[in-house]
Each structure stands twice: as structure tokens, then as C-alpha cells.
Image 1 (cartoon, rainbow over the protein chains, first blue to last red):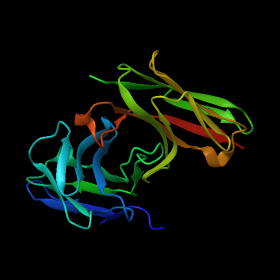
Image 2: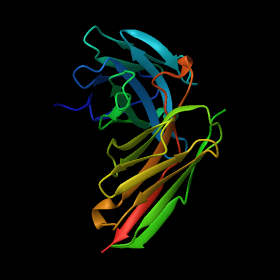
Image 3: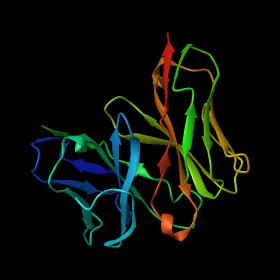
Length: 116
Length: 115
């Protein structure tokens, strides 16, 4: 069974540009969460989508947005890039169920974004 | 506000040693706790998930325990191997319907197992 796929793996952008990252969840998983990982702040929750709706949002500015499609694939967009947006962006998918092991989050390999 | 702390930040042990990684959290209102492993430049691999009603979970040489009332979890690794070298992260999912899909992570413990 294929894992969580994130594309692209690496991106280099300049300040002021915008970027779109893609995440394809494990087949059958309807929840997709996004995280930002930096050396200083560690892993921080950005937002979660379920059935094309944003259910939860972390403390990030409005420049960070996302969406989810009917096939559960998700995209994350960052507008007006700043140097501090350089990070590893990870997405995770989960099945979402009352079952004991069904809420495990499975992570992709991430997209490393460098803002110059 | 939930905060997750992992001690120590780094650990170096000789191969074959049994070791314990610690994780503490400030708010006991959690839905579950998950341990992950991250290799350099890679994503996270889920190791164990403990529901709030459980006390421990085991997988192979790994055993994770949870004491929700004291806000602590430990990850026990038996007979460590060089291939166990990685950063280990613990994360809690806060309880409550407004916290779906959200994990709060510790800063991790970087483990080096020397041959």
C-alpha cells in the first residue's frame, strides 16, 4: 500500500513569491494535517482538512492556506514568502475512526522549502 | 496551553544497551500520545500510539508507557543497535473536538548508538 506522497521534495523560492505544495494521502485516509518543521521551533501544526473542509487551524498567519479535494489530496499555499518560511513542510494522513489504531498519523517525506 | 518536553535532548550509548527516553506534557487532557522516529532529512515514522485509556504499548524491542495523571511517557528501547540512531519525537493529541488532526510535538531526543 502506497504511503503519503509529497511533491515536490525540494523548492527554492525568493522573498515575495508564492508556493504551492501537494500531498497525496494513503488510500482511504480522509484526514490530512500539515506541519512546519524548523530547527528553532520544531514541529508546529498548521491545519487539518477532512472531507474537503478545514477542521482545525494552528497559529500561523493568513499567508498560509490550504485546501483538500474530493479525492482527499491536499495542497498547501504560502503567499508573499518570507525568509522565515524556510522549513521542512510535512503532511500526515489518518483514517479517522473510533478504532484504537485508526488515528495514527502517517507522515510523508516532506517538502524542503528554501526562501532566498 | 499544552507543552511537550523531551529529556535528554541528545543521548549516546554503546550498542546493546537498554535505554529510556522521556517525554512530559503539561495538560493531562489528551486523546492519545504517539512516538515517532525521524532520520536526518526524512519524514516521521510512527513507532507506537497509546490511547489515553491505555498504560503501555509494545512493538518488538520498543515499549512505550503512559501515565496521564502525571503527564509522563517513556519509550524503552531494548538491546539498542546502530540502526536505532535517529531522532525520537513524542507528540500528544489534545482531547476535545476542536483539536482534530492536531499533534503537539516535543523537541525530540537525538540518539546515537555506537558499534
